[in-house]
Amino acid sequence: MALIRDRALSEDSWRYIEDGEPVPSEGGAIVSLERWWTEREQLSGRNAPIGVRLHSDTAAESLVADIDRLDLVAVPFNQFKDGRGYSTARLLRERYGFTGELRAVGNILRDQLAFLERCGFDSFEYAGGTDAAEALTAFDEIDIVYQTATDRRQSAAATRNHPSRAFSNGTSG
Image (tube, rainbow, N blue to C red; front, side):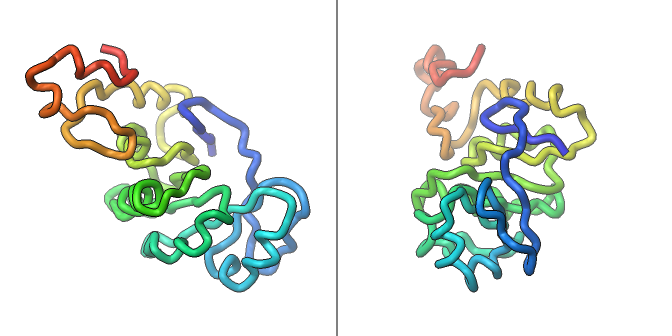
């Protein structure tokens, strides 16, 4: 499984820790939501980054009290047609101010990468059927967007009378 972080292939410095498995004292650790809830004081007191893996039906609101304690939130995509993770990402970023790493995990497709990024994801555990290096090109394929999102790009409607503004958001075109 390849990791794409900030639009580049990256080594994964995080490790998933199973329930009941000891949490290492060093290195980034990702634990289940249930383990986080029962051991949050211990886990947030370690001198290393901590992350939590949600369930696809977990409401973003369930992390509000702990949002400042977490360095990473992993949001699962069990099926490519399940869009709840997009909403979770936007809520965590926009409403609850999560600034850590937001990772899409599971059944994500190359064609979804740019849309996931627009909602606030900055890393992707990519197991898609396409070469991960080739999948990186997906981020630059959408020049004009129709809706505003977490990335704050101008929508097509906002640029209607000023076409040159459509590409003033860092995209090529």
